[in-house]
Amino acid sequence: MDVRTCTINLNHWYVVAQSTEVTRKPIEVRLWYHSIVLYRDSQGKIHGLENRCPHRQVKLSEGKVVENSLECAYHGWQFDSEGICTLIPYLLDNQVLPNCKINVYPVQECHGFIWLFLGNQKVLESQSVKPMFIHEWEHLNYISTVSVIDCQAHFSFLIENLMDMYHGHLHHDYQAWTEAKLQELTTTEKEVKVIYEAKSYYKIDKIWSISQLFFPQFRSLHSEPLMVNYSYPHWRSTLGEDFTLYCLFCPINLTHTKAYLIHFTSLNAFQRLHKLPRWFRQWIKDKLSGTAQTMLDGLVKQDIKMIEQEQQAYTQQIQKPTYEINPTISAVQKMIKQQVKAKTIN
Ligand code: FES
Ligand SMILES: [Fe+2]
Image (tube, rainbow, N blue to C red):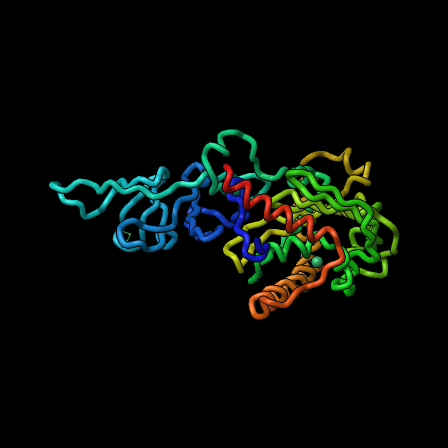
């Protein structure tokens, strides 16, 4: 089995959008060769339906939400949140509504993102699969920044990039981390966990130290453990006590991957801040959100360039071998292949 042509295990929750992207106006999202229309009903609840009008196969995301139904832009047929056709505006008295139904997908809004499940209903009912838990999202001590990764490459190239921390070399000008040394690699059925000893430039122990995100002169190099965890299909990383990163995957097809990279800066060290009223702490959290945007977008841009070139090389020179010395990569590839097999068993 070639990892670059591996499919995904659909029996997991994948992230298809940020909460803020979904309104009363329908939008199209894509996940593993499926086009899905997302919209909010009058109660603000999110629905995810097959993005295809059964009348003439056009996209329902071109239409609009009328009360709680989705109305197709072309001839105005309406579908309820169960995917059932409930109205045709020009239906004659002697005609009945066609018995057509479109697929409805389990969808939930959680930690600021929209999670969608395309897999087997029985697996979902078994409660064994849940969206990744991101406790920092709601916690008042964490400042978030989100960057969207959209790359023309197989998802394996992206997760390998995220797990191989020797690529700090690429981000040298952003001073993200340096001198990574692999300390520990553990693999279980569900995850690949790697600990590197690395040097970090940042230490967030005083309120003004947030300014290190902008001004290199405030940074000083020191040792920190760098942990990366592939908890299929998503990823989490911590650098010392101060930084946490998540990457939530949305593979679109074999050569196109979308993902959401979330960076959290911790305010845990500021004991005095914790005694302030909740509303004020929430205000600080909201005000500071997006602080790391320039840095995060810059890192993402550098990574995408490498990842897309790997994909292009793979596509063009399929016979050429590649050489790898980080054992993390083979552990990640093994996990991807195991998940393909697990999918076929379920
Ligand atoms: S194509 Fe949708 S109503 Fe005709
Ligand atoms: Fe990177």
